[in-house]
Length: 205
Image 1 (cartoon, helix red, strand yellow):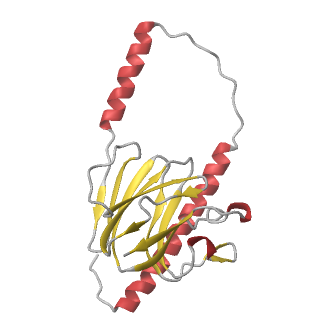
Image 2: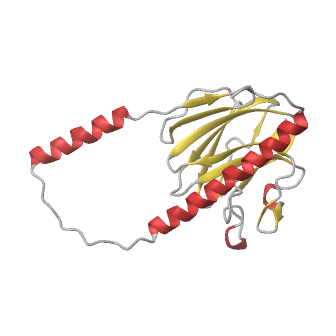
Image 3: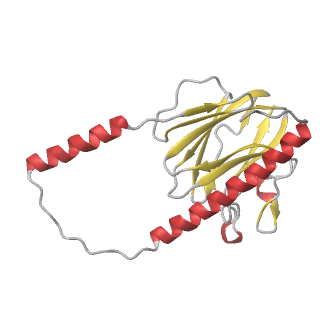
């Protein structure tokens, strides 16, 4: 498909529309995951494996794990990299990489500040359902953005729309000095039951 050339306003409008579509897809995925968890249980029969059978199963599992791999997608504005969330963090410059573990329903940023310029957010979904990650430039506290049932995303810089359970995704962005809110804004994740949920404050010096 031949790429079209437009203004930055046209690009921003198209990107906002795409992000809304991605969020709708994630909402449907959450709904399907909920229905899957609500399926009735089936009583199983315990089978005693011999040592030989157990060894064969372990070999098959090891081969399957070895065949699995991650993927990278890069463009001029951001870098997304999928990897197992259990991978040990690589050596990094202070403040250039921020670890962001997510769960039901928590979100933290370590460290909570960084230097202006390119910063990499290593977002790990340690939970059991899909989450997202949104960076918003705002003067308000990360927990004070509620608008209706979700957070107000005015000033959004970039986001990762869908992070599967057990996955880590890296997002590299160029940020100016100021205050930022890091949130997951999927339905019910930002303020679950009206209580503080998935949000964290971040400062760029």
